[in-house]
Image 1 (cartoon, rainbow, N blue to C red):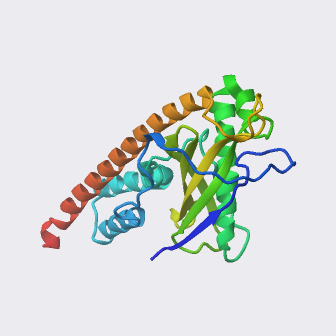
Image 2 (cartoon, rainbow, N blue to C red):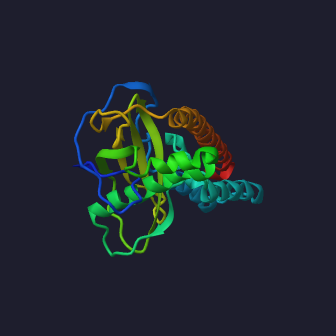
Length: 273
């Protein structure tokens, strides 16, 4: 059973200035459009199991043609494993979307708090990707969200589901995805991948709220609706996530079909019966 840890705080999500923001607690809003939350895959060891199946084909004596086919499949698994594992859950894994990529593990045994730090660093990079790559026309407006000068984004809570303990030597890759988006709040799914084991070491859910630090009228600071430029990009991102999930699942089904066909060829030969 996975160990679960819930850490609640009100630290600024994207604050790049050194001055601390005022800490306040408030509830999130109802969801107005959504994407299903993180669900564990039916077989979390699909990648390693598929490699084992291919390895047994070589052991049982694959022909040169079958060996070439198996080699092509192994090459795809080696090259695209992040897309299969993370993409099949709706994460965008492209270079302009990832939060951390092959980040070094520097301790012998990774402390549980380190996973939340990786998620924090990756979340800042995920947000910066919108300003730098996704919506550069509104780069300055995105940058304002990371300060306390007006409307900003605050982390309300984070929940971590630990899958297995990571140890040095290893590297981590971290992706974020939008899960639920409301009028003034949203949740992010996080997947923390072990490069050594090529599977999730932890997954997180982050609850984020929109907060107006300095209203222009005389009303007190508090919760605020999404700026329109943010909402437009979030709607587009949700659609891209759905497409990425379908593409990854199609690729997985194709690999399974190819491996099944190879197994039938090898195991049905006369000398194997």
